[in-house]
Image 1: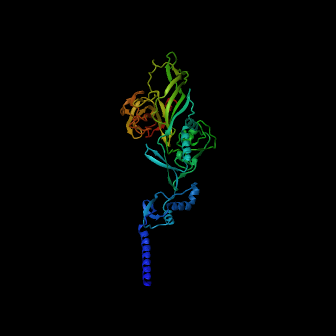
Image 2: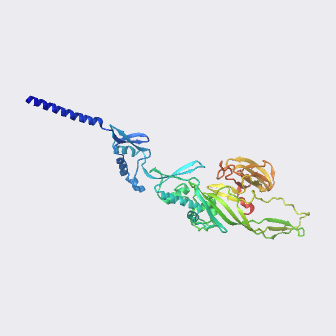
Image 3: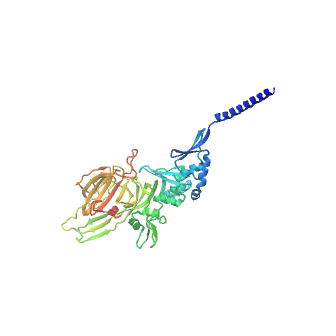
Length: 498
């Protein structure tokens, strides 16, 4: 009996042991897979960690200097770093410290901010600007607009508080970016230039650099116009670089320091303005002969007096410069000019000479508008004036008798004509849609030599939808030799005493 009890106890013990073994084996065999995080750098796996948040917290703790420098709450791994959820039965784990040690010297860490992409579709360029605060970008962008539009005009336009023009004045009718900036949130490498100061960002948008611009100390006899010209600026660019001056006629103090930095905006703002202003009408000069007077008589017998006209212009500007191809202005004559009359006595031999037509005429139809004057423009010399308003295909006339010196085509000037005149003068007519004279041909003042167009490089460029955009005449005057070949250019407006 006793033996039976021992045997039964042994069997029971064996059964219990087997059950325990099977239970343990069952747990090991049927346990489900676990979720971990696989770590990649530039697509290459560098480890497997149990807790992604633990790793991110480690990065943030270790990079406290970056947090303090930029005033941010969190620092993130480098660009190209990625963590992906990964499920496995048999993980070979890496510690967060090991992963951190692998990446800390490989790439710069990142912080979260705003990436502004500035595109120029026409020039096919792209640039990125980085800020941490979207309000900083908005304020700097509005300052950029105000530089060109004018602070008061921009505020009035933005707040819809502009006054209607009753007689003379200006009014902004439209403002927008030529290419809308794209703003997105992203991770920015700390090695990039990240703007945290509005003044620095505004300077960069306007000058394309944050380096200190060149300055000049005013000397006796200096004016805004002479300083600008000597340093390859036009007066508008000088006034933008020195906003404390409001007009090129402002007086300068000897010893005063002014900026002569050349602006190089990295984006473009387009705006439309209506401008109504009164302009002088130049008086004509006439010579009359009186055979009853002695031949030595030569006097001004009637003083000339300028007239006055009211001109309404609708202009489009890009970064402060009027676009080529403006529509014709509307003009109302308020007072007709009085011609200057010079009376001369009788001419030996009888009759007075016939009018030879050797004075200077205007090269386009009227009314027209000058959209860009003679002088420096964005760092390069503009050797002529741009005239528009009379439309694509309208006649272009020789301003004086002469001989056609050259007919050609150039990637900048487009179709152009050069005419040689007496006394070493040369005139150049560019961007023509059609040429109607040949080299060596004699022409007279007022003769149609071509048609206004937009060939070559014009702004804005023509498109398939609007093939006549940028239509205007570029007109130059040179003396002493042909254009760009020994001659010297001067302001064409001097031909007409302006």
